[in-house]
Amino acid sequence: MIGENERKGRRWFLSLGLVAVGVVASAAAGLAATADDDKAKTDAVKSFQGDWATAENEWIEAKWSFEGEKVKTTVAGMEYSSKLTVDPTAKPHSTLDLKIEDGPEESKGKVSKGIYKIEGDKLSICISIPGKDRPKDFEQVEDECYLFELKKEKK
Image 1 (cartoon, helix red, strand yellow):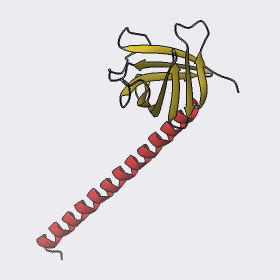
Image 2 (tube, helix red, strand yellow):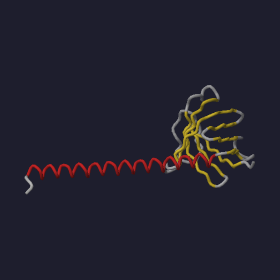
Image 3 (spheres, rainbow, N blue to C red):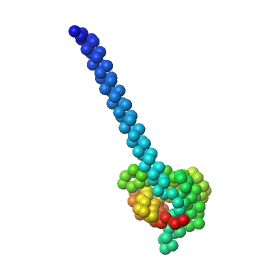
Image 4 (cartoon, rainbow, N blue to C red):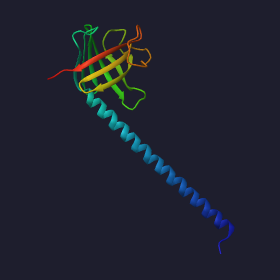
């Protein structure tokens, strides 16, 4: 017959085992979610690759070139080089951040936060002025953010 202390010991050991199983399962789920997020981000960066430009009748001439996580942007004759990070799972809009590595002196080292959507060969980006808050929607707001409607250039 099992004594009371041994029964308590077995219950404690069983409880510890169940906690360990729960921790391992949670960690595995977290790793799977992280892997899914990483794949989504990698796929999103791939979807940007190439050259994109505004139509001739747009409010401002702009060209965006994506190579990996590097972005070269020319807007109204001003050139920028940035590092791209994206979150395609953000809600209500997918987000992007551009860490400006080279460009006009007042922009260097700052981050422009934006939202984006890609529909075939059309890329819409609403991007903040460096250092400002992320736009809430795809609309231009004076002294806050700019909206770019870009088309993929054919090679």
